[in-house]
Amino acid sequence: MQNGLSVDVEDWFQVGAFERSIDRDDWPSLECRVEANCDAVLRLFDEAGVKGTFFTLGWVAERYPALIGRIVAAGHELASHGYDHKRVFTLTAAEFAADLQKTQAILEDIGGTPVRGYRAPSFSVDHRTPWAHAVLAEQGYAYSSSVAPVVHDHYGWPASPRHAWRPLADSALVEWPVTTARIAGRTLAAGGGGFMRLLPYGFTRWAIARMNAEGHPAILYFHPWEIDPGQPRVADAPLKSKIRHYSGLSVMAGKLKKLLGDFEWTRADALAPAQQQRAQPWRAAA
Figure (cartoon, helix red, strand yellow):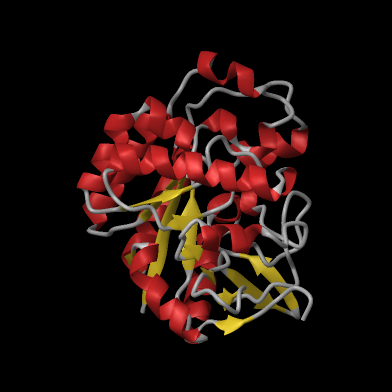
């Protein structure tokens, strides 16, 4: 079974964990490492012979158009991660629509390819954003991978189904939640990111194999900064945030190489049509 491979293209200073420690106004003055890190990811994917989806911030695309060109030229999907990593539940529906329009225009102009996939910053589509999927459908998106069906202190929609679901009765839009695993009656995050860095490799491998055994493709995500142990340190960030962000950076690339060899991977949009066909309707009020 093929699984979805995805990268959330953002720099080390744009993550949700540091949003109270680093002001957005200071971003242009900070050391940008996203281009070099993305190029390392592109080499890793090329060596493994896999294609993936790059959910990209408009802010990054504006500053590194040549990087966007390399992503598209290598055969990967270019998708939206919003403009500057504002969590969806901090926006109004109108502000969200404007953010989608702005980012889509930037990505399509630079990449020269349609953008039909979306991932919310920090998986911030949840019960607080009942309008989000309708806005995505209105903007022409085919799929979203913006929900984490887990309990977490920064995000999560634990009531959400674990597998792809249809949020709107009048739209083919599908929500494809990040991969999770069921253990002892609990749903645990298992789709990459910090969980992959912090937990043993065997757990991630087991969780993906288990998802496939359930008859569903997994969707893996990670960030370019997660393979960059030399990135700057944010001294005044909360201790929990620093532990989450910096732990396991030196081993992430090795884990990714193993995972790319242990399973079959492809772009999210290559799997989206089948997900749309089998996805069941679900609404938070149901």
